[in-house]
Amino acid sequence: MNYAIIAAGEGSRLAQEGVAKPKPLVELQGEPMIGRLINIMLRCNAQSISIIVNERMTEVRQYLESLELPVPLNLVVKSTPSSMHSLWHLSRVIPEGKFCLTTVDTIFKEEDFKGYIDAFEADEKHDGMWAVTPFVDDEKPLWVDVDDEMNITAFRDKPWDGAKYVSGGVYAMTDKAFTVLDDCIEKGISRMRNFQRALVEAGNHLQAYSIDKIVDVDHAGDIATAEAFLAS
Image 1 (spheres, rainbow, N blue to C red):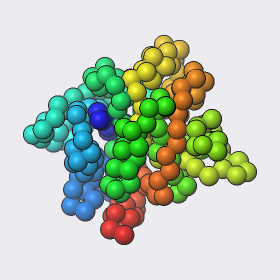
Image 2 (image 1 turned 90 degrees about the vertical axis):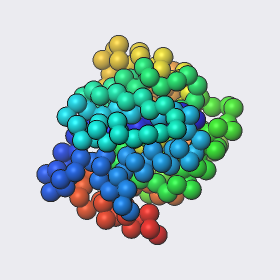
Image 3 (image 1 turned 120 degrees about the vertical axis):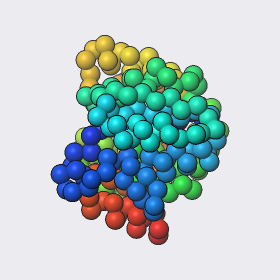
């Protein structure tokens, strides 16, 4: 499996709340968040890892450049206006075939992630598999509408009667998605959620994979919450 990490945000909220380290280097259980993700990916049969960081994150870039990994590390240094644009730049270095993308501040348990990756590697029917969760942690969650077989039918900004899942910020897909991504960039579309809507509108078959709990680290108080979650 090829993997990709978006770590191009500035972590401004954490900085404003007194966290000195750049977000990707904030430690959880003694390990930088980005290092934890990389190690999980390596244990989940990584063939390559592609990462984008913004141009101001010199510490993060230096950390990544110091790593000696058993697989290729494709590092992109670019400041972007949105996660969708970050993915577009990553699409230039991600190898062909299936890949899994996550944002750097998405925190999940390794065993849950492994089950998800195993399911996508074995899947031959869908163009993508989205990690979703019934646990709502995000300030502006993206709600995911599914049918009885967990096929994704829509992405919505607001919940509705019977809504169960929100996006977990982890996306497994094939390079077929890059055609839609290029089209979004050409049309001036922004935001990751709009790219996801465009995938459905273009007829891509996406399946939802439910994980009980996924949390985000957006604020200083989220660090302790994430550590407690991982230790539970």
